Image (cartoon, helix red, strand yellow):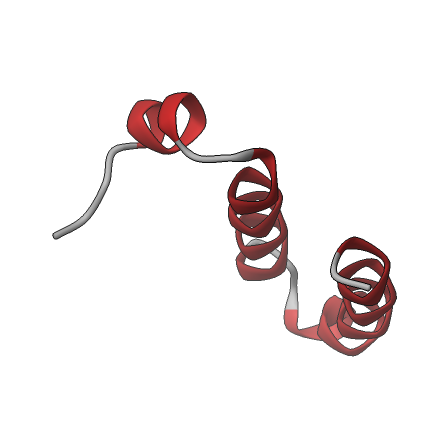
Length: 50
């Protein structure tokens, strides 16, 4: 079952909203940008879930 964006933004805790935002940013990246984004996302991920 897929949740709507409003449901995601309204009902999930902040960490899940962050994950969703990271996923959207990652999926919208160009192939050229993927590697650089991946590195920065890994840093962000470690910061959020340390």
